Length: 223
Image 1 (tube, helix red, strand yellow):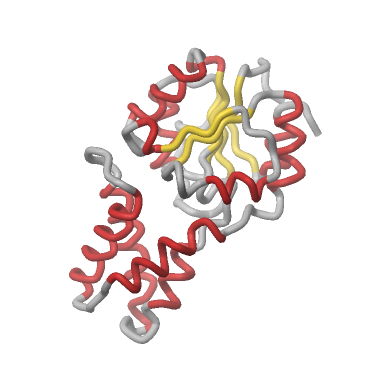
Image 2 (tube, rainbow, N blue to C red):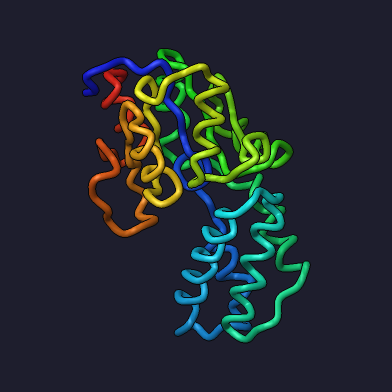
């Protein structure tokens, strides 16, 4: 159990709360163009390029996905087009929450204001938020902040919007690289790794690790 009661609990959305299906859909879309023995490498490169694409000045999320996809295709010597990008981007709002999310998130939101800090767009994220069935206090998109995570600007914008100090906030994510490294730099009150198996282990960034949002509720004393 935490040693303090936070003013806010903030969450990464895609991957942490929402079962982000980008890799699974890309595997399906490119099955005829990428040999089975190279598919895992193709998907890993696509994932790496998506991270690289959010490190610079803000651009719409569709461009992030499209530019990462084009770079991956060039690296692997295959063709891609707008139909691939359309399929990937249009699928994003259809992906639902992980099974542990809805009941536990509602329980947390009844006690502590919950905030989404998401690498998304104002017109893209609403179906995902609605699917979680919890009363979010605030949802901050990269579009609004003018920067994507892991850039500090995204976190600073959220804190300024909330009128909160870093030590008053618990930030939760399944990603060290997108969230917990920056949250650690900011000395946020607690940094909770929600273990979804997205990344290899990294030490020193998360203060706590849970296996789902139900585990977070227990950590907050709300089980």
